[in-house]
Amino acid sequence: MALVLGIESSCDETAAALVAGTVGGERQILAQAIASQEAEHAPFGGVVPEIAARAHAERLVPLIDKVLKEAQVTLNEVDAVAATAGPGLIGGVMVGLVTAKALAMAQGKPLLAINHLEGHALSPRLADPSLAYPYALLLVSGGHCQVLRVEGVGRYQRLATTIDDALGEAFDKTAKILGLGYPGGPAVERLAATGNPRAVPLPRPLVGSGEPHFSFAGLKSAVSRAVDSGQHQPADIAASFQQAAIDCIIDRTRIALDAMGPVTALVVAGGVAANKAVRAALEELAAAHALPFTAPPLALCTDNAAMIAWAGIEKLAAGHGADPLDVSARPRWPLDPDAELVRGAGVKA
Ligand code: KG4
Ligand code: ZN
Image (cartoon, rainbow, N blue to C red):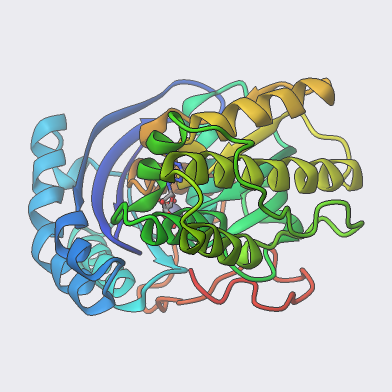
């Protein structure tokens, strides 16, 4: 059984976790701690990279101490130190990666440089040991909206991506337009629950097109126009936006599923996977394809360090070995480097 310390600092969550487990068997999150920077960024309506990097630098070491104490583990007992090495806001990524390098070097432990997206992509296997490769994954976060065939550690086939905004970004922008503040996704979901999803006519960009890609920029502009018209209740706008977004992801994911080879399950991961309406719609889509549906528990959907530690355990088990101590932080790091470049895709992390 491997015991891995995970570190996450790629956006606005500073996190540390200790995870023990084997790929074929038991797994356990021994301790995890997350310090959210919501309060620091809220006055600016979004994440300010300089503020984020500084907050990570101040909080990370105390968080690592906390999880070690809670799990009653010493650094010496850890088998490896895994940290997000990208993609993300580079200042924050560097804080986590440099800290992991120092700990790995001081303790003589392997350093594992983890792709944050791989953390999200493998997180469903931390929660569900029966989930086997290859599976279809809808990865929906603040910076990404992709459908991937997850074939194994480091082995991804990307079938679809967004040509402009990510889905989480669309939720965040809608929240901003509606004056719901930051972070926007959960606030839009709460307001949408009280509105009528058919009250406001909104576009479903790219629905019906043969390529399975996503687009949300036009939807966001339509939300803005609906607000400016003064003709609709905010709850109806939120509900109609959420429904339009769901109609888009279901149509696009269906096309991607039809285009990929056989899979064991349909899986959703990333921050927007915390949205209950999104989960319910995907569960129906999976059933229509006679596939099991898996989504990580809510706490593993948004950014966390347990998924980084787990990706480390998967990498060790797959025989990837340690990364060199001079490995670089990467602002961009696609899971499938062979995927065709799509306009606007992956511009943000
Ligand atoms: O995966 P994540 O924590 O960070 C990134 O790697 O981007 O995803 C954050 C995104 C944000 O855009 C946030 O608004 C969205 O996930 N999100 C949600 C919900 N919870 C978080 N969107 C819709 N409904 C939610 N309940
Ligand atoms: Zn993330």
